[in-house]
Length: 343
Ligand code: F6P
Image (tube, rainbow, N blue to C red; front, top):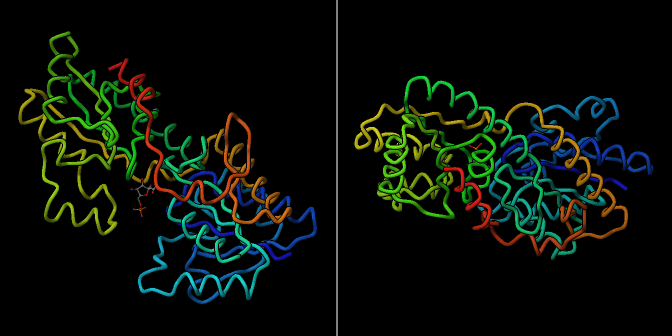
């Protein structure tokens, strides 16, 4: 069998561990593994698949990024991209493993509905793919957030300052919530549980009354500016809608500026940005990326197409792509309440 592997959307630590697992398992059973360059672009544009060799996957379990590249490639603008991907799969491959988040898995599902031999692998640093407890990259991201908060706490406390830390999280607040919990954040603002600037200022002032002159406030990049009491119109909202990096909306700097205006305290801002996506995967991401990668190969070998290996109760199980290609999984109330217990 010729098994194609691609990574689509944003990169994330752990992608190479998954590709390695797929390769090792497939070669052991005598199959050929084709690395597709730059995600869906490598199938929708000129075909960009070349065989992966054992030496290319030998030492990659700890390497960040993705060895065949990735891209945010819109298959619907202009229309016709999905059909070209379908044709390329039929012409060049016997199966395709697509590693990616919600956008990628919606395409995988569309292809599987048209009888393409496709299996997904859950990856999104935002951790909000429905139907799975694990997405490749999330653990590495929150490890970076936690370490950053540890560092920021010492300088914030020394200067009696507020530091606003903006994390990734386009639609949901998993990175902010769990990174913030692990790093001892003093307040966490996420899209799921809206907060106004009045709430944020009251919190800063209450801490000062309690003798705590410093605060670390973690804000997810996708928090709605209108809810905070800012502008969600004109330039800012157009950027969000068109898919420009959400960091350009400046939620972190916005919150920092409002605190400085009204909070009678010195404020600094740190936008963690792509530091959360770069570098080596944690051991947890290496292990689970290997497990879901191996699960994807097993699904291909058994011809269980239209599926995706997901993690439930610490086990890898096969789920229909239809069950994950349905939007985003929000942070549940009880988890946020646990974070808030430490504010
Ligand atoms: O979708 C994952 C993500 O990391 C988001 O959290 C973030 O908004 C986005 O990617 C950034 O994308 P890009 O690297 O294309 O700017």
